[in-house]
Image (cartoon, rainbow, N blue to C red; front, top):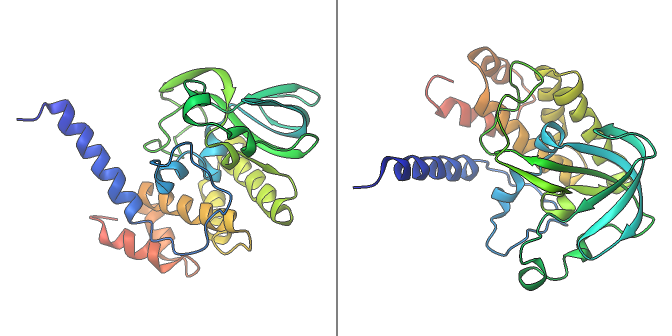
Length: 250
């Protein structure tokens, strides 16, 4: 007989697998994605690094110039502060894989930005359970304790947590700042929904995939009223509606 705790964990894992198996995303994927280990599933890794969770949960978000690049960290001088920093601040950002990195995951510095490159980055010390956290609590504060607190400011999955400002003709940066406004500064479910809905048709592969997946997350967390709002929108991908309608009491 399984221990109750073991049964609960297996149920959560099964739920997670089922949710991600039902993403039904068939479009182009982020072609610069890199996971820290070969056994990290692509869908699982993206839980932490789509634009919505990056905007909602990162402790420091900013734009700046890389002034130094080392084996396991790089330094950014901020010229456009967004969250948790000020203009002119010098921020040291680590790869986040300190234990055994040299022997198990060598060469990760290749996924850092180049010296003097101007980048957008989102990093954290507080690590939350993004896979199960609600994007829209009733208030701006996150009412759960972090699963882990890093000693140093870290990235999640390296080059999924930073990009050059001009990547995709600036579309990625624009979408990220709009998402940041909707989920962090001026929290508005409807505005975030529209960003995800419209972003799913973006020319940027990263924006398109992240938007599709973030919209799927919204549909899974929708109240009855929000579900009807989504179902009534003719611009929402039918895949999301079919998935909602397949659930009990959408």
